[in-house]
Every structure is written in structure tokens, then in C-alpha cells.
Length: 215
Image (cartoon, rainbow, N blue to C red; front, side, top):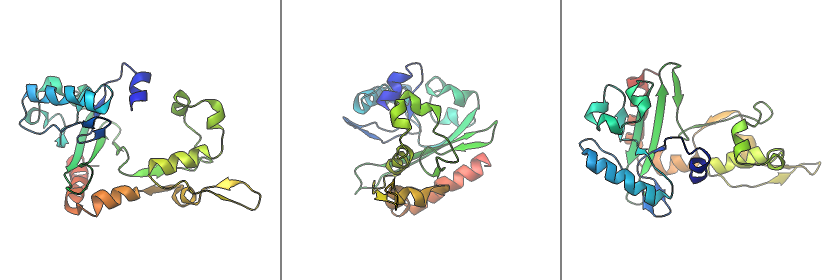
């Protein structure tokens, strides 16, 4: 994230609550907090996360209609004021975890598109879906043409081991990636830390996405 912020300095950086950075937890924004309290939490987050933080998404439902009940309008992201997006943020404290579990889902109303960050992941095959230009901002061409680049990237994104094998011709492949390609998946680590240990909260979050946003 730090590299992204440095690469795109004009971008506004909003993060999900409860994340851990190199210097501690970023904190959370809850209904009823004053403007001063919110600004202090966000200011501290820039220090704990190690990069500039412009805002922390509040817990629960966030849309133009609900915004006034959560936080002062001047402290909300502009796309909420414009009614462009609505957001549903899951936040669960799990005592035995290293920190809370937090996930945000964004509904873009004009296109009726759901963005779920990494709550679920669609893993296209590199043969069907070429490497996207965004990767060129981080990696040079020699890295991107490596046939193992995309499989390794996918496995790291869903926290699966980079176990490689060789076929009869000696070419390297990743069985874990082959099992994920062209599928919609929930990362095993999220199933273990969120779904299995807090099923009611996760179910409620999914229900709110469907019902509140009519997605």
C-alpha cells in the first residue's frame, strides 16, 4: 500500500478499520464519534500504518442516506456525498486473533457493480485474461513475461503455498493455481479466521449487501 500511495500521490487513501501496520492498529470509526475523535484516529493511523491515510471507513452501512448518522459530512469520502457508492463494512473482534477481522464491500450504483476487495476472488486464467497494465507500474517487462508470474501472484494473494511441480516436458506449474483458475473463491485464510469463528456476523454482512444495495 505504501508503494501505491507513493506512486499515486493525488489519490485519496481510505482503508478498512482495524488493520495492523508496522507500528500498530489503525483504529476504527464508529457511530457517535465526534469530528475531533475521528480526526485523531485517522491522524494516528497514518503513523501506525506507515503511509498517508485520509480516512477510515466506518463500521456498518455507509451511503448518502445513512452518512449523517455516522460521521460529519466533511469527513466522508466525496463519492459517498455524490451517492456514487454505498459501502458495507464488516468488523469483528476475535480475541484469539492477532487483530480484528474487517472487510468492506462497495456497490457502484450507476453500473450495479459490486467490489468486494479480497472477500472473494475471481481468478481468471492468464490465457483467457491478459496481464493488466496496472502491473506495469510495479514490475518491469522481464518479470511480467515470466509464465509463472500470474500463478505466483494469485497464490500469494489468497495466502496459499507456492508449491511448484514439473510436467513431463520439464516446465514448471503450480497445482494450487490450477485448482483456482477460472473460479470464484473465498480465500482459505478468510474462511478460517472469519467465517468459521464469526458465522453470524459474516452472514449478516452478506445479507446487508444484498438487501440494502439490492444487488
